[in-house]
Structure formats: structure tokens, C-alpha cells
Image 1 (cartoon, rainbow, N blue to C red):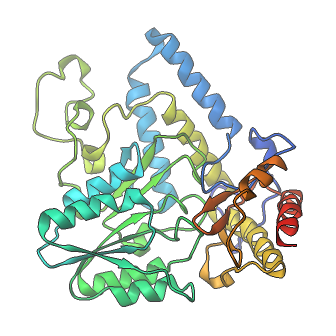
Image 2: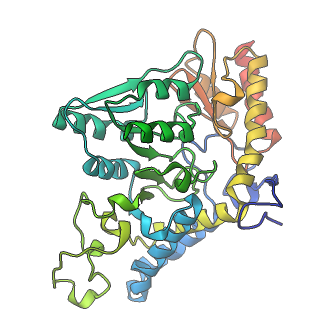
Image 3: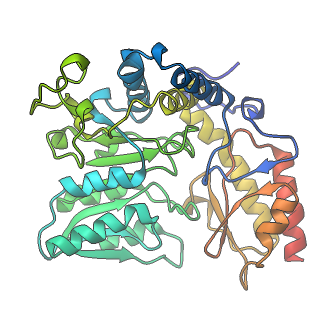
Length: 392
């Protein structure tokens, strides 16, 4: 039996047994790279196939595929992060969400935008362009030698800071950032907070009520167990009368009246819907995204985190025994860990791992290992059969 929908078992999270049977994963594959892309959730694949069948026979399509199904997905993601459905926009990528944030957050000449060194490019380029256009500057927080990203970010935020943009962790190795502390510091200096939580939404507890970000984006193809080219953007109510970066018919107030959509109107759909991407009602992606989030809510995010963290801790401990440099347990998230090898990683490491049926990601000088509920002790053993030979 799965944990209850609200993610609790009494007052404490409960461990979840291995869920590999719910995924399209062969027995000879040890897949430890959910931070790159999740494997196929069978329920999501079936939902997507049903959507393809609608495209094959378009006379079966109806308004519900374009409107009601979108609202279902919007509402489920809102539930996941503690928001209202009206606060959520449908976007195709993290860069689209960040571009929307950059188009709606003020930056005066001389003010700064704080972000992380080696941050994922989708959350960098838009801010560089904004700084260039407005006479601002980008402050890049250097990777701390003690792995304490939170302290380094807090030190970088000052009275000149207009925008702070990051995630719950560093995408390359899971380096932990205490968003509660960062959000409080941003509020203290009057800075906006724009978050890309693609590497934590669905696997790490997150509440917009607590953090009060201005914008928050997450795409679905990683920890949300959904399709590629699909995501969600939280827009705080204070920005919901802002400027979308494109103008499409579904964002306007008369969108449901498809017989009269050429009766152009200036009014928008309520809430954050004005920021929806065009062709948002993708009848393949929407059901896949919905299936993924339903499964996450069924498991419960607290339960997911509680189950994955011990696996990640074991990976860290065994890597440390082999001589790898591993951050302290309180300096990385519970679902991603970066392993660094003194002297650097062998050039053929990825090939050696994949030949053994083990799949991780190499990011810079780090082996990024990212397990999920479909992994078990055997997968970890197979990883270390290769790493032990490399370290010998």
C-alpha cells in the first residue's frame, strides 16, 4: 500500500518500498541519473500514448483537452508547492519561466543580480541581458571551499541587490542552499527572489507560502517524472498583472469562446494564466505531466525524501571510504550527491560505467549521482564495483 495522498504517515514520513515496477526500467540497468532525466513512468507513457491517439483521430478532440485538462495539471502542481491554481502558468522550459521573471522584475542602474557560479545557463543568460540593458551588474557567488553555499550567498546579498536567483541546490552536484534563510535575507534588503527548482520540485519539500518567491519555475522531465519540453511557473499574486513574453489567444479572456476568438480583447485570463505559453494544451504532454505529479502526490514528497536520503548517504559514505571527496551530509540535498576524485576523473569513466549498465552524470569534475524510488541496494553495489576498480 502506498503512503496517503497528503504525504504523511501519522506525524512522520514513511519509507517507500522500491517502485521499479512502475517504471520502464530493464533489470540490467542501474539508473542513477534522475537529475538528468527521469526514466519512463509507465502511467505517464500510457497517458501520452492516449494523447497521441487523439492526434491521430483529431475529430475526437474537444474543448476539455485544451482547457479542463490544463487546469487539472495546473491545480496539481499548485498543490505540490502549496500555491493556488491561479498562481501557476504553463511553460515549455526553465528558460521561458526565467525570461518571464526577467521581463517583470525591476533592475535599476547600479543594482545587482546575485546568482551562483556554474549555475545552469537557463538561469544565467536572461539575467546577463537584463543587467546589460538596465545598467545593472551580475554578482556571481564563487563555489565555496567548505561547500557552504548558503553562507556564501547570504554574504553576497547587500543593499544593492535587486534580484536573487538560484535553486534549492546546485544543479551540478546537489550542493544545498537554505532557501528559507536566503528568502529572509532577500526580503530584508528588498530584493526579488526568482527560483529554478527543477532539481528539487517533487523530491524535496517546498512551500511558496514559506518562501514567498516572486517567480518559481520547474520543468517536468526530471524529478516531476513527466515529459520533456513542459513545465510550470509560479507567479506571486503581486506580479500577476505583469507583462507576458508572448501574446497568444489562450491567455485572453475570451479564449473558451473558440467560435469568436477573432473578437479581440485586451483583458487576460485570471491569475497567472496570461503567462501561459502558446499551444499550452498539448494533449500528449499534459496527461503525462498530470500522471507524474499524481504519482508524486500519492507517494508524498516527505516520504520520497525520507526514502531516497539514506541511499544517497550510503553512496557518500562508500565513496569517502574509496578516497573520493564528498561534501558533508548537511551541505548537499538528500537526492543528489557529487563525488570528486583527487587528481581528477578518468576520461573513460562514463564509458566504463555504462558498459556495466550503470548510468550517472559527469558534471565538471564531479560524478553526479541521483537515485530515486526505482533504485535499490543492488544498483548501488553495481556503481561501486566500477568505482572501486577506478580508485584502486
